[in-house]
Length: 330
Image (cartoon, rainbow, N blue to C red; front, side, top):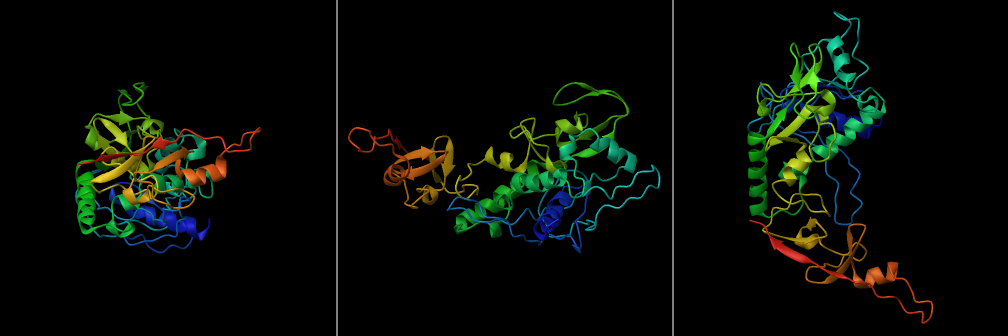
């Protein structure tokens, strides 16, 4: 695995471990997991975007709930999970992450319930999938001021309150157990039988249980990475989509919009200063524009790049341009 991917896995350990359950290993020679890890993440292709480091810190907790905020190393073992075949004949070195508190045979039973390409074997498609989902589902700029750009003092205060509230009211981590009595899956409602591996989420109540493959975000339908979830209105969310139920996200920089005003167009939102032509960077607030593939262009750039020309007169054929809308959020 590349150094970039190794650092990604190590940094994700801090947030994953903070949710109170699970073991994660870095690959290679990473020496420790802490709450102050940084990565080099490829920049977003949009000109207003910027690279963000991966998710960093949450607090440790005895259950899967995570009140508050802290700066502890979270008690993670930074090395690859290395249970031997002490009681099952199975070794776990083949995985880059496993749920905590399970015997090796239970770990294998848990992973056997997931699609093969999503099992985090070392140097596999499943490991790459996990890394991708850590960065997608748990954006660090949703939680930490230091990973946001150009926030006002008021916005900094708002983000801290926003992050603390989400952790206090919604954040948790699923616990994997081998069930001993039949129970319906909370998502698909099919019966889970005694001996099956199930996932429990304390914020959903003591009896709510999911098949391993059903423990997914209700929006993106992806497996909740490292079993980290946010609970809202009786639904499971990944961190990204839970944040978006509370505030809009800028389509340019990917940060949560904390200002009172934003620009909305075509079902998307932008910071006022980021609603700009993709080609020339001209701000489009109050201006006419055209959307293409979900990105805004000023009329001049759009005509120069995409206009079709009349075969008879050779002049560009006009297009029906839209008008942006501004909405205030309280």
